[in-house]
Image (cartoon, rainbow, N blue to C red):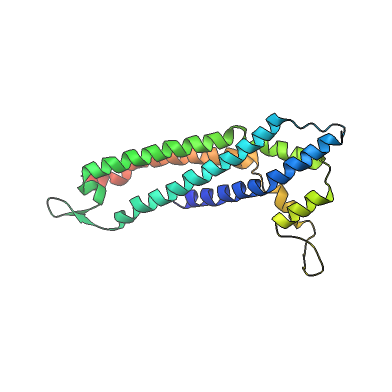
Amino acid sequence: LAPLGLMAYFSEAYYKSAALILPIAYRMFDDTVKKNVPGFDWSPQEQQELEMYKYKMLVLWVVSTIGVLLCMVIIIPQFFDFNDKRGNPSHLCIVHRRLGWLVFFVMALFVVSMCLAVLWAWVGGGAASRSFHEHFAAAEKEEIFLTELEESFDCTNDDDKEVPDEHRCWQNVSISFVHDFWLDLLLYIYIAGNILAFLAIPFFNRSKLV
């Protein structure tokens, strides 16, 4: 439950950051193209890749949030004892086998859906992040675009605000797109964790089934 909660939190943060930054960045990139800056290339295909990255984070956020709610609904009854036909206390899914199988198939469907969402984010997610940083670093940063970014991140530096680090906005921009290392780690941990959990099911249920 905790890993799903962390996944929901970070994917929400990455999605919202992308939704804030990308519209401004697109105008910045288009403006740079109009100025014929040497070595700067920006195409509709690259914009589509960044848009797809944003929607991947949205899907990951939605699916992981559903997973958190689903796990809460399934896990909470396991803290209570239910009597079987012989009057012996046991878990709900052991007492009601049909319900147990239903829960199993629902969780299996979620695990597959979550795996597909993670895999979809992993495929091309790191490349999209690198593409954004490369274009952002090379783009002409007009004052109007910088002001919009500062206002979006609420880090405008003026006489009425004390900003301890003048580079805070740019740090926010730099960490707003997930690094491919973390996508690799997320995929490997998710797959390995579910394999271990599946293999552990007979061990944890052995005493209940005897």
